[in-house]
Image (tube, rainbow, N blue to C red; front, side, top):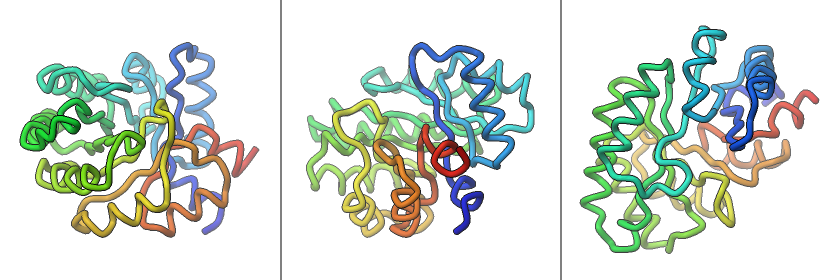
Length: 214
């Protein structure tokens, strides 16, 4: 892959809590100039970006970064973001339910968000750094049966991010129609290439533009 082909798989990300409009404008300009898969931004900026950059694919985060808001709240967040112009939703799974082994509730939560998203892309963030292997495998089933389009590894706010070992595990346990997004700690061109070769369709990264074109 050349650099533009790699960038076409990157959700160009800015989720810092103090991000300014100037920061967002820079992110969007970079994404448009070099063809990022999307910009991944806080929900508060979706409407602004959609109005100023109508051709830009916008991804936003729901239940972020801790995931423990209720399913009804997450569904409302999904719908609100889509009405503001988001094309893709990255929703954090409820880790308290994971640790309580309440996988039926997790599947139901994903299904509710799937309904709220309609035809828009839904990615489910499972935050791998907190999970056992058995929990990771169980979540593959939840993500698939709940109707999500992607399993995403990490928020980038936890103590660790994506690993190639987890990507291999997920690819073995997910049906082919469910794609994988790796995020967290992916900062070099070699990293981008390795995760794409391992089976990821998307990579969440804030450094992609500087690494590939800076």
